[in-house]
Length: 350
Ligand SMILES: Cc1ncc(C[n+]2csc(CCOP(=O)(O)OP(=O)(O)O)c2C)c(N)n1
Ligand code: SF4
Image 1 (spheres, helix red, strand yellow):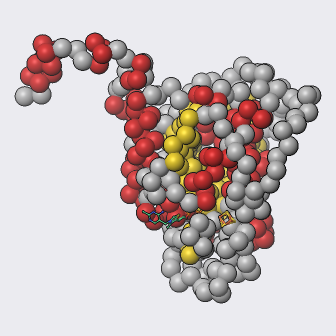
Image 2: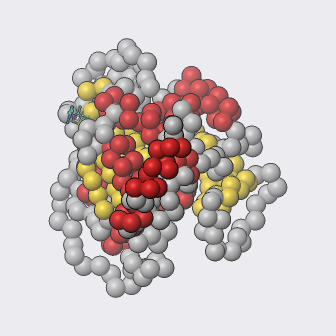
Image 3: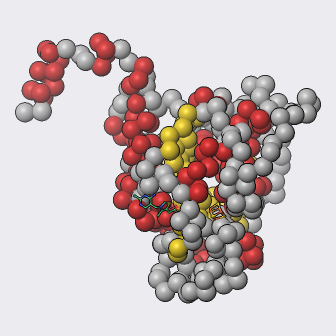
């Protein structure tokens, strides 16, 4: 929705540790349809980055093609950005990350962009455990090209034209788990209270952090019979747990009943504190996460929250043993060790 945004900001707006208000994390005015779930997700990204006091120039946003992939224009206007080709965001993210490991990589995609044309790239970026946040704004249709069913549209779901989808849907969270994703979460664009901490935790995760966010397309897939409409998701959402991300330096003051919380220590010492709704929920148990996703699908429910996390895995830089100094900061001499050294390397490979 295009609208006029006032330049006036209240002088008393709260500031984060860097002295920035949320304005420093906003982008251009959105041109998406009024009520599109994607705009709510953009708002959550802005809020998460503001709350984490990340300097905008330390973030790189990357996307493919689609209404969802347009959203990086509408958040983090002072960050780096690259709007790539349809389904090709993961390879651009991989190249950028390999060249400069110092940035936070925020990838945004759609269910069409990821689950069809970009499927090949998606599965390989997971296998490689690239250190990035990968958000799918999942509306079950190709919004930008006028609402065709996507590969995540549920079997039996009805589109706006009244056609019923006969094909099995691809469950992106289950697929990501199966392929070895080290952080898998699901949420709903209309649940800011859950989505903001999930985005914060995803940014803290050292490795591939996948967030599948159901994000209704109000123009083409918000009708009765659609399983990605606002009404359906509100009625069928089942949360695994609620949680906070406690920064490394913050004092942990809150106390919870024995057995109702679980803490996961992130690589920088921050804590994810889970307040479990289901006492049995353990986000570090991959098998039970897979079962829970399968059970939810059978019951026609959408399981939300932090579904799985593995803080012990090695990301792509660790696997490849790359230098701690980002490649783009190395000098010519460091990058090219000379003929003699090259001979040694070649000899070692014979
Ligand atoms: C190579 C190529 N093929 C097809 C298209 C047409 N196209 C543009 S966006 C899109 C799908 C978008 O759907 P999704 O990723 O779910 O995003 P949404 O618009 O629903 O947010 C398609 C097929 C294209 N731009 N490029
Ligand atoms: S067509 Fe759908 S996905 Fe695209 S902006 Fe409009 S509501 Fe959002």
